Image (cartoon, rainbow, N blue to C red; front, top):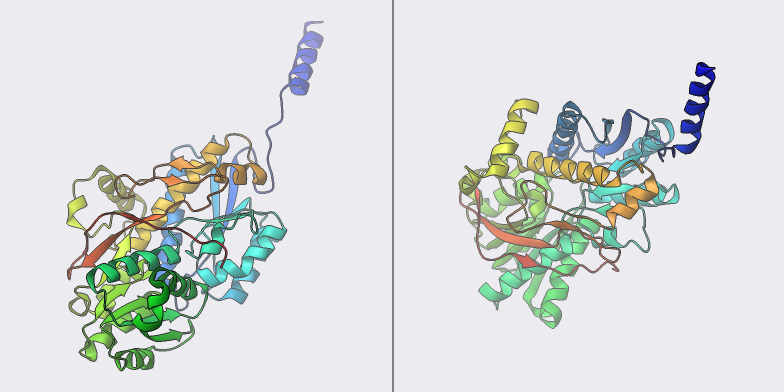
Length: 401
């Protein structure tokens, strides 16, 4: 009789306890996360993102995971080639049954998979791109980026140029995709009618180009005294070297996408890069001001344990660490409602601090604001590290281009 009562009680418990909501990629013990990453090809410097993120998830798993579930991270190389990206993402969604795509790397690769992921209602969370349309939740409700938009940085650069060199003659180099076009749009919008007279030269390049020497020569020939360099790491290093070789001394503004000592300044030659201005939203590990900072010491401890072979001056490891922390915080915010729909509900209600963000900055979103980071601070390369100067500047994203 006692056994029958116990069985009845157990059955009652099963029927009255609500089931934990979950979608593909989620089990009682595991959450499977997918990613495309440029471990090879012309943007392979960004591969440090994926390595750092994988290491952060290993640390998370060592500390108990997310609500008791371990993160299974599948990061596939796409060589920064959009056709390969499509192939890898289809594999991740249709064969590996991932829960979501995290930090899809690069503007062109992230754009080419956006419609597919939205059509299949698979979250594309914290895409590693700064184009403004990644915050257009009306058109792409399953997509959100993470970093400040390229257009915002274009605005920030232009505000500085107008203050310091109001009669500047501006030359622009840009990558011929949405990355570069958003930057140019931001500069032109900020200049307004002055764009017609102040911009004296614009040159573009393709990610598949071998060099950009001819473009730099053409920009130099315009007589420009200000150079806005919107390029990814390989081409940024080439641009720095060529500007130096031409004995050209413009005010050189470099996209934060390439403001990396290890990946760009050292390959170019640090002596050739002195004085370059960029912008940032995080604590650069090469800046000695953070030597005793709690965030920095925590990051160093993480690197020593989980990526001991990595170059600690490479900011792409820092950014990957920050992005992975953001995802773990988001997943924790989801609680036990691990459905794709709930992930996107929580995406619209973010308000947390990520280690290594600059003081006073937070990651915030709302149902009408899908731009987690909107503030940047200028920094100048002194031959060893990037040094902050001025006050933080908040830009205004324009999602409809």
